[in-house]
Length: 377
Ligand code: ATP
Image 1 (cartoon, rainbow, N blue to C red):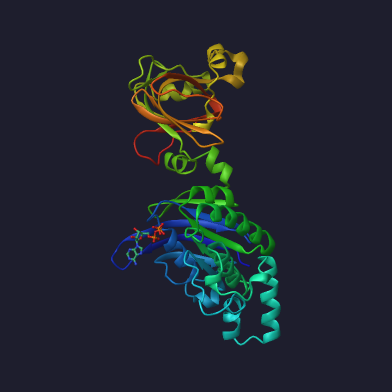
Image 2 (cartoon, protein in one colour):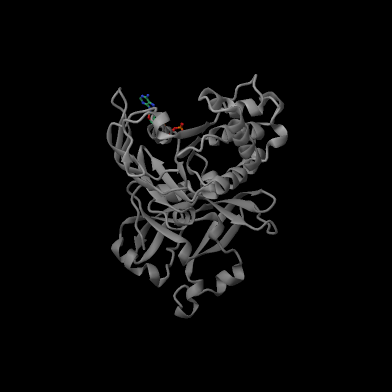
C-alpha cells in the first residue's frame, strides 16, 4: 500500500488542451480519497496519470516518496475498477478472479487460497461457480472489485464504478465498498460526479473544476466550510441557495423584495466592506426554520438570543415536492428561485407567502464577481 504525492502536476494533451493545472495533493496510506467534479473537470485524466496510462506534462507524482513519472502501470502496482466491469463472460467468478494470477504463473494452491480469501472479504464464496450473466449488476461489480484486490495492489483506482447500477444497488454497493476498504485498507482513489457518493464514502474529498483543485477536505469540512461558491453549490442535494443582494445602509437589498433585510451584528464588518456593492448570500435548504412563532419572537439584534440570531425572510411558495421523509418546497425569494426543506408533516400551499428564518451560522456570503471567489466571515 502506498501514499501518493502530486507536485505541481499539469497535463496538456497533444492538441494543446490543458486538462489539469497545477495539481498539488497528498494522499496518505490507506486513505479513501474521492475525486469529484462535473463532467470534463479532469477526473479521468488524473486517474490515467496515476495509473501510468497517461504521462503527465509537468510536475511530479510520488508513490511513497519515489517519483513514478516514468514507471509503467505494472511497476506502480495499480489495480483498477471501471464503470464497465470488464469481466470475462465465459469464465466463472473463480476463474475471473484467478485469471491475472494464473497468467503471472502463480501456483494453483496459492491462487486458490487467495481467491478464497478475497471471496470471504466480499462474501462471495457461494457465487464462485457462477458466470457473470448469472449475477446481478452489484454482484458483477463485486467480482470486478475482487479481481482488482487479488494482487494486493499499492493503489486501488475506481472510476465511476457504480454508475451502471440502479439506485437501490448503488446504495448497497456504496456501503459494501466502504466495508471492503475497511477490511483491506488499500489506498483508494475513487472518481465520481455524484456528490452523494463523495459525501458518504470519502475520508477526503477533492473537488475539481476545469482541471484545477477547488478544495480538499473531509466531507463535513467541505459541506460546512466551503472555500468558494462552486464547492458550496456542488455538495448538497438540493444544492445551496444563492441570493444576489446589494448592501444598502448595512442591510441586504434583495431584488424583488420590498424591505431591506436586517442582518445580525456578526455580519457588520462584512456589510461595511460591501456597502453599496453586490454580494451573494447562500444558505442550505435544510438550514431554514419555519416556525412562525419562533421567527416572530426573534430579535435579530438582541445579544441575549445569540443562538437564535439570523436573518428573517419571506418568500412565495411555488410548488412542493413530497419525498416521503421530507418535503422540498420550491419558492421565490423576490425574483430568485430557492428550495427549502421541511419535515413531511407540514403543508405548503402554492402562491401563499411563507416566513422563515436562517440562523446566522448557516449563512454564507460570496463575492458576486465569478463563482470561485468567496467572502468568508
Ligand atoms: P467525465 O466525468 O465526463 O468522464 P472527466 O472529469 O473525467 O469527465 P476527463 O475525461 O479527464 O474529464 O477530461 C478532461 C478534459 O480533457 C475534457 O475537456 C476532455 O475533453 C479533455 N480530454 C480528455 N482526453 C483528451 C485527449 N486525449 N485529447 C484532448 N483532450 C482530451
